[in-house]
Image (cartoon, rainbow, N blue to C red; front, side, top):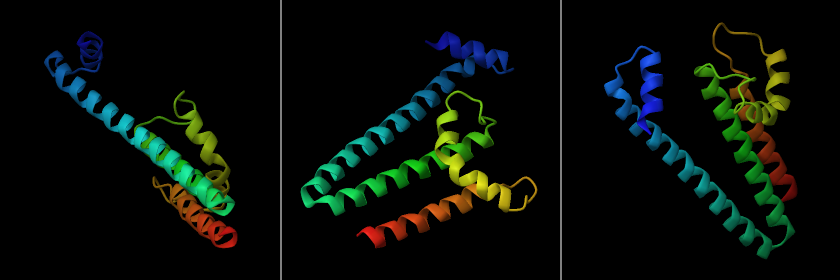
Length: 140
């Protein structure tokens, strides 16, 4: 299991002795991601079951909250992936761009560029918060 990681470390100019530490870091990161996804799915299912018992308004409110959190997480992954050089055409980043392009791209066309910093995801997040609050006030 360590040989592929060792090859990658050596190819990138590192010391092969460090492959064990990279494996530990990789396992820790994957573990945290898997636990976060599992917690999100379990909590969403629990909320959905509770909302179904309360009626249609609670069900719609829960649906709005779940969609909001999925979009915020996709926006967050899009930003972090961009920091590491993973953009639109990376296989695992395509869904993040697909989920968030409808709100980020119009903002990017309106908002003037500010050097190396792109504020359009931040503005998109703020708009999502306002949109969620508006929908919750109108529907609930």
